[in-house]
Length: 95
Image 1 (cartoon, rainbow, N blue to C red):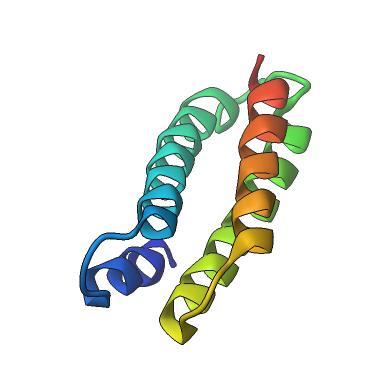
Image 2 (image 1 turned 180 degrees about the horizontal axis):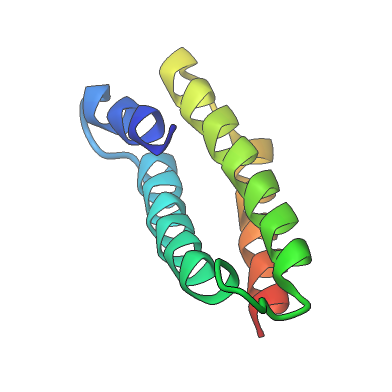
């Protein structure tokens, strides 16, 4: 799925600030998914793993919505606001 989101950026010509914002968010998401896998995919996971997974799932959904909006063109202020909120929510859960 992440390949689909990343490929949407490669198709786009030029580099506008929403594209950079979504791509940066995708990079952050990928990093935190890797940390989630290291931390929570063990025999005795920490108690916050369930909340962490829910947060990552919401973030992934919003990244896909953002990629779709980029393909269609136009502004995407709501999508950018959603991924920003997801980043903050996931940061809170991981601490």
